[in-house]
Amino acid sequence: MANIKSAKKRILIAERNRLQNKAYKSAIKTFTKRFKAAVDDYKSNPSEEQLAAVHNAMSVTYSKIDKAVKTGVFHRNTGARKKAGLARLLKAAT
Image (cartoon, rainbow, N blue to C red; front, side, top):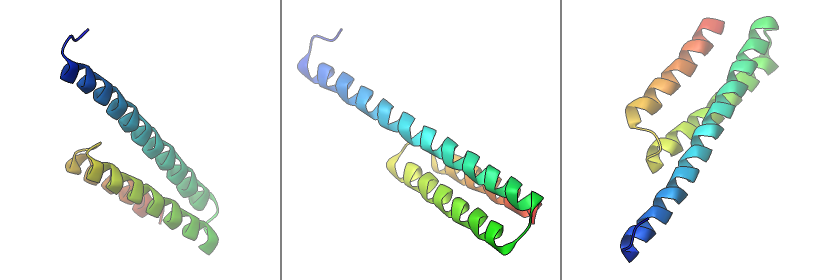
């Protein structure tokens, strides 16, 4: 355990940031799963409504990834790689 006051503060800050980063990563995983489920639904039953649902899920997921990159949870290349993977899934489905 740290003895210096500033080191104690840094421990608290690091724990707070760790929890926030964990929440972001978890949310991105959840949105990615929802997007993949929407793509699977679209593959099984292609329709305009399904395609709109896929695009909506993609938009939400992209937004969350971009915000995670902006806040420093992910490196920008990691964010770009995740978004490219989602786009690849959609392209394969259409």
